[in-house]
Image (cartoon, rainbow, N blue to C red; front, side, top):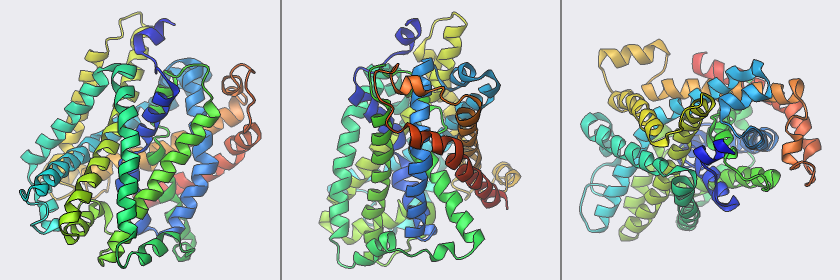
Length: 470
């Protein structure tokens, strides 16, 4: 098809899986999942997350992949083709990755700085293992010039890879980065679990303690946090999976791909918890430390390990860097794909380089606001007023509460209503590949899309609204 030739296509199913996993596996798994689990009772959060991944994550993952491949378009045009009354949902989902990337590259810059410092630490240089970790991270937050420089470097690297297109840039990077990420994560997991005193951390994760559900308010709080995390972690309702689905060959098995991505992403999230919490408990740190858990607590752990800690520290920051970069690529591609669609539809050339530059400039502006705010440490009148307008503690939470807090579960809910009630069976032919392949999970899929998904997602949306705005 002309559009496929102009926008690009994956060369292999493995490349698609690695790219989709790369979009899903990111800071949502290695930064957000562990600290949110720590703040929401450990096992009580994990149980709800697993349930949501099965009854909403898999059906929506399959739906987004099938919708993208069926229409050969990104979110806006894909929803318009399914039912023009739902075009607005595609617009909202296209806004999501821009909101997410507005803080993603900020953290990508922090991670790149820590990766560079971990390399220096191997040679006894730098300050990563010599200063107080909390003070060091605080210093990075308040040094706006330094933080902006690292953020810009991370954004430029994302842009360069996306320049290469689907098969030439995104697929090539993810085919190497994702297997390497999983291998490094397993090494850190083994070392963390063999630390003296690691047992309480594993108990925190897997001991069946549901005390966090002690009240209706407590249950909804944990449910909303797990639901928002499920969408953020799997890159659902962000246009990423629909865009990648539009680049996928018609012969590939969507059911198995959706199951592999959902399971693989959830496995990495759990492994990230196993990598972090045994170490956190072994060194007497606070599991509910919030966003600083990744930077402050883990640096404390690695410093306490002595010389060996410097090696594991380098591996850890390298895997977090790969995870952040692969997801940043997916977010940028979602917006780019939608713009390319509109140009192709208007009969104009789909110039990837120009569109990528425009997307990068927009992302830089959003990230500059996040970085200059210093996670709420700035007392500048503009930042105080901006975050106060949304009743959030920092600019990062402004982007996050709109994207992960509201738009992702809300547009996911709208998608289940579309596919379960307005156009039921719309994707069956695509999933069964024109009837040449059996749609094995049809019964489960239809039940979840029509009944279970809307109920759970309505509760998640309610929980998120009350959580962010009381």
